[in-house]
Amino acid sequence: MRRKVIAGNWKMNNDLQQSVTLIEELKNSLAEKALNCDVIICPPFTSLYEAKKLIEGSLIKLGAQNMFYEDEGAFTGEVSAPMLKSVGCEYVILGHSERRTIFGEKDEMINKKVKKALAHNLKPILCVGETLEEREKDVTEKVVKRQIEKGLNDVTPDEILNVIIAYEPVWAIGTGKTATPQQAQEVHAFIRKLLASMYSKDFAAMIPIQYGGSVKPDNAKELLSQKDIDGALVGGACLKADSFIGIIEAA
Ligand code: PGA
Image 1 (cartoon, rainbow, N blue to C red):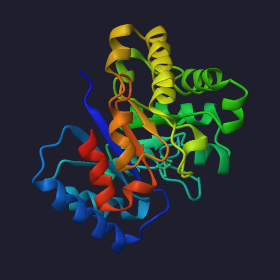
Image 2 (spheres, protein in one colour; image 1 turned 90 degrees about the vertical axis):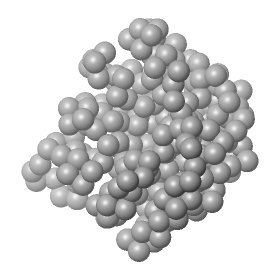
Image 3 (tube, rainbow, N blue to C red; image 1 turned 60 degrees about the vertical axis):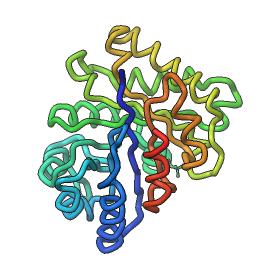
C-alpha cells in the first residue's frame, strides 16, 4: 500500500534563526513517535543547508520550494537542481499555484523543471489545481488533466514512481476554505484514473497524491482517510510545530 506523505511548504517564512527553532521543535517532538507517514519539510532556500544538518539522524526529509530547469549559467536569481542536491534536498515542489499565478509559470516550463529534477534524482512534488472560477465553470477535471498531462510530458514509466502529485484547489489555499473530503476524493480518483491511462493501473496505484489547501489538525483525519488521498501538502499549519505534528499524527 501507499505510505502517506506529509509535506510542509514553509513558503517565504522563517529566517535562519526561526528555521532552526522550528526544526528543533519538530525533531524533539517527533523523536519519541512511531511515524505512520513520511515527513518532508520545505524551508526557504536560505535555510536548506542548515536544515539538512539539523535533521540528520531524524526521520524528517528535506525539500525545496522551486528550482530552475538549467544546471548553471546566466540566470540571475535562480537556483538549480544540482545546487539543491548539494545541500541535501531529496524533494522539490514544482508548479505551485503561487508560482503559476504570481510568477507566471506555465505548464511547459513546469514540465522542464520536472524533467530536470528527475534527471538529478530529485523527487518533484507536482502541484495542480483549479481556481474558484474554473470550479464554478465546472472545468476542474479539464484543468487538472491539462496540468498533469503537460507537467508530466515525456516523464518515463521509470521516472514516474519518483513523482508525487499534490492536488491543491487554488480557492482553498491560505483561505481557510477546505475542499470537503468528498470533493477532494473525487478529484484524486480522477487523477489516479488519468495516471493509469498515461502509465498503468499498477503504477497509478503506487503514486502518492497529496491534498493541499487549508489542511489543519482538525480536518486532516477525515481528508486523509479518503481512499485516494495519500498525504497532505501543508502551508499555514506547518509553521507551528504543534499543528504540523497534529497533521502528521492524523496520517
Ligand atoms: P495552506 O497552503 O495550507 O496555507 O492553504 C497550502 C499550500 O499552498 O501548499
